[in-house]
Image 1 (cartoon, helix red, strand yellow):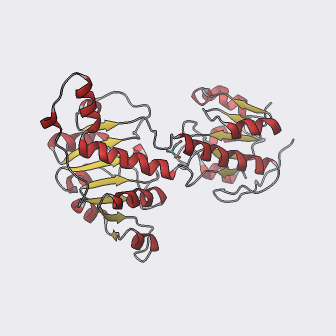
Image 2: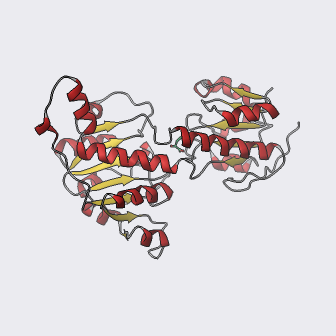
Image 3: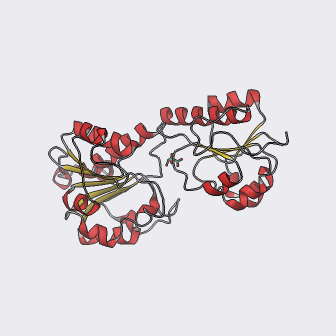
Length: 325
Ligand code: MLT
């Protein structure tokens, strides 16, 4: 039985370095076979996942030797954190390691919407030269509304400042005197105020009970007519049928979605609209971010197996259970 089970596609130099010290089983498609995963995990001391493996209480109950779950990424919505903590298992994630890449993709999507870059590209490649069809809008002088002003929201806003945008932020966990807000020259406002004033609304939220279906028909109706909407955080934040209706009515001028309610999504009406851009949850997918994420998660997994506390633990960095091996 391996020491470390990797049931998703996590590769790179750091994984190879782990192999030199531990028995590593990398099975990129195992996340999709829950029964086999439950069997394979029974004697492993570490599990390393991205966001596809549902690390449920039931799976964890099969993992009698497990000391640590390493999450190569920041979101913990696929992990039953409480069940892991109750069982004395460490959870180590990689906060901040992919924040720059996520912020850069968000800016790319905002620019793509504002200037219709994907549609213009497709049209031109079809042999057309339709300049009048692609009259976009400038970002300069416009207002960006950041919904969730954590690290990725902050880095996105920093980049938007360079385009001459002004920043509104909504974040119930941020105090108005937070230094980051003054750094961004941002106003901290209510969600309703942000939606009514922003030309571009960008979500940077974890999937929690509070954020689930936050962007629904009521919220889309509150948006400035024709404003752009971007979500690179979690699909559960958006009620997709409500967004579709808002796009069709013109209440929302365009939308870019890197994340979906169900991933992969079924192709539907959203995908057929010309003012919608969809990408396959790639905000963190740059060589640089993946290298940092993989290095950080491998380091923490190795630390726990060596009896040291994980650096980026959610809760305790040391397991409360002892491995039999
Ligand atoms: C993250 O949570 O770090 C990103 O969404 C990427 C991922 O889920 O793997």
